[in-house]
Image (cartoon, rainbow, N blue to C red; front, side, top):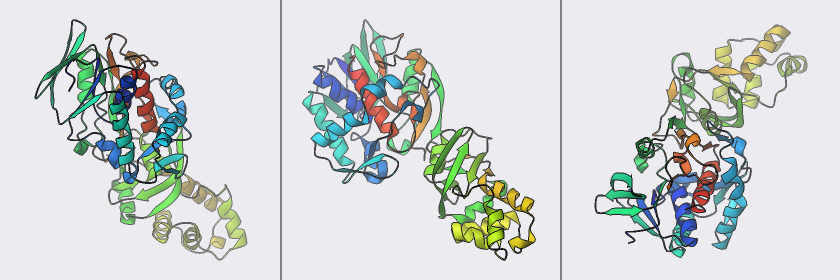
Length: 391
């Protein structure tokens, strides 16, 4: 094991391993320290075990950050095509699922093995199962003390992620370290996370297991994907996406019939005057959901007995059904974290702290959070690569 490397990388996740591989192959002696018993644990569970490793539609506007421009530099210099070239060099078969999301045909283990092989090619070492007891900086060196020894290097990379999925070993360690070095932290909150319902909306929990395609909105953000009712509230891709933009106390709007143009219910009355709202909804939605919506709307009888104004009001409610979640399922179920170490503290080109030369932050620890569907992995690859070019 290298005890006097050129760089110490804290965290053997996606960003840390990419940074280690690239820096090592540039001739730097690199040591990765990981607290878990094996590297890449979050990679292994991602994408249902197949790792949604990037997205064909990566663009800066699909990332949340206090500085929406920060991610542009790294994302433009290490692209999905660059990662695909690496995947191809290892003969890893992949497929596009939906919306540009790329998955391994086989197992996420292939991605972890590929990254570890790349680290080995660069002569780097990955030390797992080490608890970090202290980190200090003096005389141009960062000293990392673990439960077994102390390492020192002129460069230190924080790649320990955020607090999402604590059962995988995630914590706020990166933020504690940032504050120790005087770096500001944007308040972290769970993202890509199921939302919970209470009060009048609790009735919808009886629909647990029912899914349907919707438009979900929070503020100016809107996503068209599946929503899933759960025993606690709402989940599914559309809800996970919108959760990153939702703030407690705000409503989210659901369009249950996103393909229907205004006036559709009035037109249905003209074409099928003896149809009921319940029967019409059952043609477009799962039965249990159609029944619940019909009950909540309280419209009985045939459409012919309703005024056009009443039907237009029903259309509006179905196109913008308001839920006010009472919370989310928290970091325990969040795929990623919104917020993190402030981008104002970092160089967008190198990921180096402006006020602490030699200190770098990459991946989820940074206040850059992507959409669901491979965007966060691409940020990990790109930010890790960017830091490696500077170490």
